[in-house]
Length: 385
Image (cartoon, rainbow, N blue to C red; front, side, top):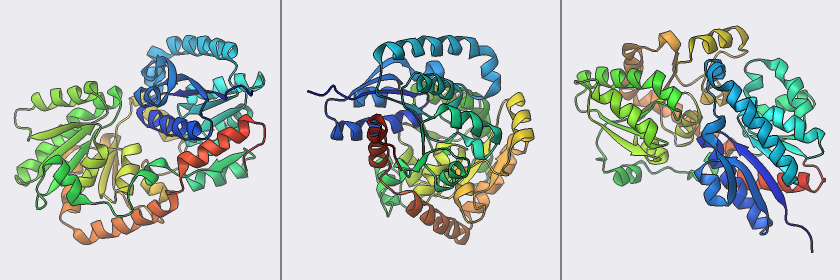
């Protein structure tokens, strides 16, 4: 009787946890006796992964956090490599967090374990020289976006474009009224969604900015309703504290893990660049994007970036379609003005929606299934074309 497939996985943030959970479910459909272990979050654990450490232990945001938390994370990675050597997985899947996973993948690959990296680092956007390290570290790259696969093909890295699981989970015709009904909102209300980020470090930089922007908007449009969603209690409480610190802040209804409903119900979203921007686009929700980095991270990005835009919708669109305000340009007045202009311009929202429709069609490919097929083939030594 053949040994069960052993799959090691490492994810370090909420979006990677969701990707890992979807992959595990699809692998179990094909390999019912498969064993999963590594580092992940609650979704991966619920799907059947034996999580040795919480994913927050390896999550870093920028070079500023690297200075304070880096040594502990390096020790953790060394311990993890030792554990994986003992368990001898048939394949390793590193889900995003490239600063942690690529070194681990390189070591495992040299020891004979095939190493798959799921979710391309933004090597096409900045620090392009990293592609040499990626080529040495991974057996195969799984990308969520088609232009990433083209980049790796040009640089000799085995790659498969699998599509994006978010597109698979979102219906072809999102029902805004149903989302509003779910959240108890009127169909006639003007609604702004606020998504200031999924990490505690992002909330530290964004919470006050988003509260001040909402306050600026509420003074000019008292009928505007505000809703917000967060990945956990900690980030929600960070935002709630920022609201309480501002006596004239508007009422903002706070939700946990309801990004699809919150974005689906909104006329416009104000959000931090990241997975939320892609989800908003796939739900066809017009948006304004912002982001603030630590000063050192921003200094490095400005000098090493190969692209002009932060948000994924602007990289996927035929031309930049989403307004962005980054770092010092992101003030409450500037963000509020962009949001208000978008709320008041239905033609512009419709044009944005048409661009988002095209993105949706490109990315809806059955990503979990395609990724699972590739993992099994590589684990068996067959390769994945």
